[in-house]
Image 1 (tube, rainbow, N blue to C red):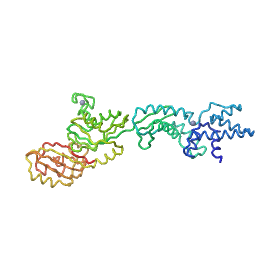
Image 2: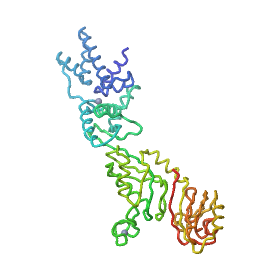
Image 3: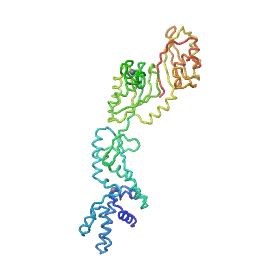
Image 4: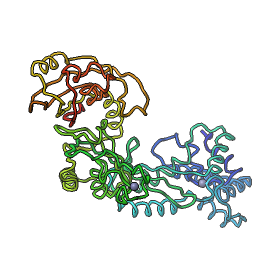
Length: 442
Ligand SMILES: [Zn+2]
Ligand SMILES: [Zn+2]
């Protein structure tokens, strides 16, 4: 019956411990009671027992009372000790937390956090605590010295108490897995940091003009410093898909930065039409996260008018980024190619091409135009070719192929590096190819 009281008394005999730091050592006993209440209850019972024994003239009880008053810093024990004219040392502070883990500090920190959080839109949050190593070591040392196995970490006390106040005032729940906001508190230095976790938005983009790279393309001559060749912009091309989509989103979400993820990329001179290419925009450190996505779509399409168009926007997660990237390497794509040949195209040969190029395995060596990436042979399926003559020497092809197959080289053969190829099958060489992406399997 008296094991816990005995333990508590032996601990207090050796170390000054505040209510939190004493109660924490028994945190897993009787769930629902706060550690502060546990610590205080133990001290109150110890002082009551001392008081009873004093009334029965047991002089040893004076020591117990003095310990609870000094090392326990218990106000009732102090009052009783003073009324009995015992000399007590009132300057002691908690051995573990050095007196930092007190309600006043917790409340002040919670109030400062709440004030800061007013600048953010969020639906849930998580508190983390940073605890100096020497504090943690002393807490662990006591646990080891008294063989305590039902305690918890000092971090838990701090995060629980501050979290409770914020939950109550802001009416937002704590979320462990994917919190909108993470707050790291350090009650030992009285500081905290707020981290607003990223917002992810997925959708499809159409690229209406060629010569817009997906990511900003730094000027090759000046490497971004600005020179005559790039008109002192530091860029090879004035726009990029990433900026055309990301910039309006950055300002609507009041984010600090963004990262553009896409399901593969097209060559800079290739347009993206049809349903478009899947992308996910990651907005970093946003202050807003409840933006109406049709408002965002309008803002992007207005900003990027005639260049890029987005559709089907919805909120996404970090996992969606991983899934999209894993899928995009193998996802099939459908292209439209308008091809001009150097001599007239035979209608019957064109028909043969459409019959032959059906579920056909293509052997493709790395295109000569990108050989610097390393030479290797890719084996990829081409699913179908449809062809429509638009003039004596002009054909519009619709081609669906496995992800990773270079389509221009399937058409022109790349000097025999891609086999079979359409140029060989037709017996005429393409002199101009205009390529568009029509669909990327999402
Ligand atoms: Zn303490
Ligand atoms: Zn330049």
